[in-house]
Length: 198
Image 1 (cartoon, rainbow, N blue to C red):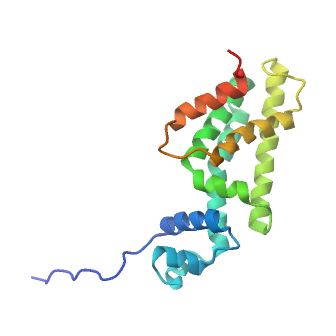
Image 2 (tube, helix red, strand yellow):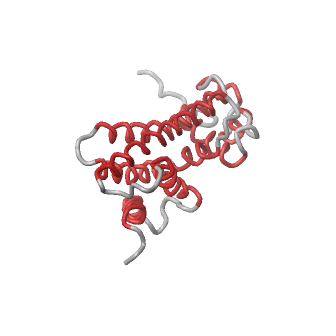
Image 3 (tube, rainbow, N blue to C red):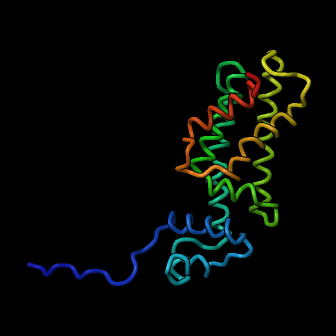
């Protein structure tokens, strides 16, 4: 009979997902430029080499964080562009689902909204955001052509206002608060498309 395995000593290991969550938190608190790989390691209670075992660089973590924020939103907008049904219904669905994506990925979206294009990774994220604005503007223009929304508002302005309303949630929405994500998404859609008038 073999002897039982000896218990592991020291801290349990961290996987790439743990490192990414920690990096996003620190990037949001300290800024990307103000955060080092050493800071991430210290926060996790490991040595720097443990971080580099999972990821090649801090920039790689930033790219992964921005991808997390953008991938589902991009898929949602692109699906709405080719889905059947009225442009108006598809536009409402994009706004609704954007709220759910934001609430599910709040730290990563918060980081996305803070990037200013200081590196190639940030510039690519901004390019992707502009592309989403353009696609949403196209959807708005189609809904206006249907007569479902106002045609006296520039579709680009309308797109930015709609995404701006959704993005403003990062300033005050907190998971576990009094409003659940589904209700919040419904309220944003009603406010954006139906207004506040009783």
